[in-house]
Structures are given as C-alpha cells and as structure tokens.
Image (cartoon, rainbow, N blue to C red; front, side, top):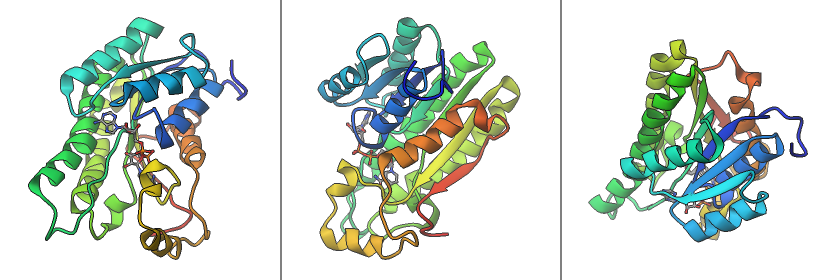
Length: 250
Ligand SMILES: NC(=O)c1ccc[n+]([C@@H]2O[C@H](COP(=O)([O-])OP(=O)(O)OC[C@H]3O[C@@H](n4cnc5c(N)ncnc54)[C@H](O)[C@@H]3O)[C@@H](O)[C@H]2O)c1
C-alpha cells in the first residue's frame, strides 16, 4: 500500500497520457492509494521513466499507445488485464493542443485534436466498458476542459472536442449504469503542466486574471478529484461533470 488511506486497494487503473502533467499526477495518487497502474502514452520512454518513478513494475507499467487508434487502445487495456488481472478504472486523459484562430486553423489541426481527445475518449470508453460489463463493475473518467463549457478563442478544435467529451460521458453513463459501470468527466481550468507552460506569457496572465482564487491549479488538484471519482466516495455519481477551476467560468 502507498502513503494514502487505501481508497483504491486492489484496484487496477489505466491512465492515458500518464507520462507527465495531469496524467502522471493521477497515476501517482492512485498508486499512493493502493492501486496498480498502467500508463499508456505516445511517448514510451517518458512513460517508462514515469512508471519507474511510481515504484516499478510491481505497481506501475508503461505501454506505447496512440489513443486515436482503436487497436492501440485495445492492446493497452489487454496489457493491463494481462499484467494485473483486471481493469477497474480508466482515465481518458491524453491530449494535445493545436491552437489557432479559425481563420488560420488547418483542417488537419482540427482533425488531429478531435481524434486524440474525442475519438480517443470514445475508444477508451467503448473498449473499457466491454471488459467492465463482464466484471459487473468499473469506473471511467474522461478529461474534458472548461474550454468545452465556455469556448476559447483559438480553440475551435479543442473546445469542440472537450464539449463532445461531455456528451459522450453522459450518453455512456446512461448506457452503462445498470451494468455497474460509472462514467464521469472532469473540466480543469488553468493547471500548471508542460501543456500550459508552452503558452505565451500574455495568454497566461490573461487567464490568471479570470480566476477568482487568484492562482493556477496544480496537477495534484485534478488528481484528487480523479481519486474521488475512481473510489467508492462517489458511488452514487455517474454522468456528472466536475469543474475544477478555482472558480473560473462559473
Ligand atoms: N493543463 C491544463 O491547464 C488543462 C486544462 C484543461 C484540460 N486539460 C486536459 O488534461 C489532459 C492532460 O493535460 P496536461 O496538461 O497534463 O498535458 P501534457 O501535454 O503535459 O501531457 C499530455 C500527455 O499526453 C500524451 N499524449 C499526447 N497525445 C497522445 C496520444 N495520441 N495518445 C497517447 N498519449 C498522448 C503526451 O505524450 C503527454 O504525456 C489533456 O486532456 C488536457 O486537454 C489540461
């Protein structure tokens, strides 16, 4: 058991995009709470380094996976079952940005973002639910964004994909509730990760000014909510969307 209180003792989790940022923070929390975790990431070397940092192959493993590929996601979930014996939790977290105003955005930038976020979350939700329905239990958490609620300039691709994830989450929640599988979504605001550190300073400052709590969030503040959704603490919640934004865009 890790240094937590064993909320996920005996559970097996898959976290996509788990090599860094929010996904890594989620995996770390899960391991601390007693789960064994498989990290699926496009960057295998980074995912392997991350799994080592989480305690090595007894508790954490890594596979290369492009979440926009149905076959890759299927192989990733099978790898978790092979390594650890079940699949109790899936966090569809992998993501990219290709920001540009619509005038400049290419069709390819639109397609890439929709396929990683929306198709990726659908691949995971569909394929994990096939395993979880056999078990009669499971939890799926889809990483949306507050950008999907309010729409951000320069993010017609990303806002559309993140709003689509909310619809996917609610529809899947209704289909899977009677099978013991819960599906919920998280909408982070501005969180300090490699993704947001790549933003120009003026964009960062503009966003900061909109946050009632007056600061950006840390990856672990998203991980704590994902722990709540993964654990029995949220046993009567499905199809919900948690805004974790320090009060921004209420
Ligand atoms: N950081 C924020 O402020 C913020 C806010 C709202 C939502 N989010 C969402 O949270 C999630 C994590 O964001 P982050 O800030 O930690 O990003 P990040 O860029 O730090 O990490 C993303 C990870 O996903 C992996 N990845 C990218 N494309 C992939 C693919 N096709 N298949 C598998 N793995 C892939 C990357 O290799 C990387 O390890 C994303 O879905 C993002 O949209 C982030």
